[in-house]
Image (tube, rainbow, N blue to C red):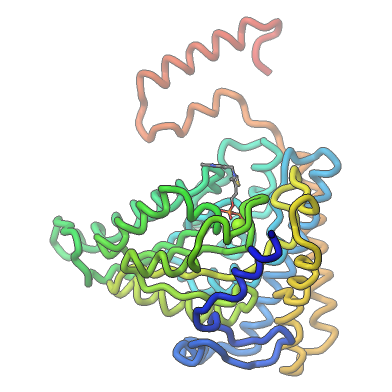
Length: 393
Ligand SMILES: Cc1ncc(C[n+]2csc(CCOP(=O)(O)OP(=O)(O)O)c2C)c(N)n1
Ligand SMILES: [Mg+2]
C-alpha cells in the first residue's frame, strides 16, 4: 500500500520536474529547465563552491544537534538532512532586503541569511523565548521558526501586503485594491512549509489573499514525501503545485535535490515578485533522510528501499560530483569538511554554557506597547515566584 502511494509522488502524468543536474551530477537540463537557464548566467564555480560549503556546514551542525539531543542536551531536534539542495538554491536566490518566513526545518536558510547557529540550537534546548531578534539586521530578516503548522504562511502574506503598502506609500498612495497588480516593491517575501502543511487551511487562505492582492511573495513547499508518518499521496490526489495554479499563482515543480534548479526558479520568481508581477509557488521534490524529529522512528512506516533510493540522490553528493567535473580538487572538499566540523564543535561547546532566560522575560515581547493585561499577569507571576523560599532564581 505505502509503496504504491510513494510511487505516485514520483510518477505523476505531469511534465518532468525542472532539473539542471542529474543524479550523477552531470549537467543535463530537463523538464522546462531551458526556460530558466538565463537565471544561471553569471553564476560560476565560485558560487557553487560557496553553496557546497553552506550545505556541508549545515549538515555537520544538524548531525551535531542530533547527537546533542541523544545526549540529553537538547529537548528535541528537527533534522534537515537531505533537504539542503533546495534550501541552498532558494536562499541564495533571495536579496538582503527580502524577508523569509521559515517553518522549523530551514536551518540552512536561516544560517545563510545570518542567524547564528547557536540561536537555532538554543530553541531546542528551551533557553530562549523564540530564537533570535528579528529586528536585528544581522539576522537577515529571517522570522522565527513556527511549529504551529502553516501559521507562517499567513504571517508571510500579511508581511507581503505590508511590503506593497510601504511601496505605495513611498509613491504617495495609500490604497490597496483587491486584484491590483503591478506595484514594484523592490523587496519580496519567501515562505517555507511542507507537503503535510499544505492540507491546513492557513496556506490555502494565504494563497487566496496572495493572488487577490498580488503580493510580492514566493511560497515554497518542500515536498519531502511525508508528514510524519502520512505519505504525501494521502494528502493530495494531485501534485501540490497544481493546487497553486488553481489559486492563480505561477507555480512549478522542481527537483528539490538540485540546487541549480532551486536557484534558477527561485531567482526568477523572487524577481517577478519584487517587480510587482505577483506571487509564485515552488514545489520542491525532496526527501527527509532522517527522522521527522528525534522523537520519531521512521522505520515504523517507510516502505523498504525508499530511503536507500533517495540516498542515491543526495544533494551534497550531487553538487560534489558537479564540482569535481568542473575541476575542483580534494583539497577543497577536505577543507570544507574540516571547517564544518569546527563550526559544529563551537556550537557543541557553547550550547552548554547558555543561561536560561529569566521566566519574567516571557512577558517582554507579547505586545510592542505596554498592555494592562500583560502587566497584571507579570505582577501575578512575580508574586507567585516570590512565594517560594528564596524567591525566583
Ligand atoms: C496546526 C498543527 N497541527 C499538527 C501539528 C503536529 N505536526 C507537527 S509536524 C507535522 C507534520 C508536518 O509535515 P510537513 O508539513 O510535510 O512538514 P515536514 O515535517 O515534513 O517538513 C504535524 C502533523 C502541528 N505542529 N501544528
Ligand atoms: Mg513533509
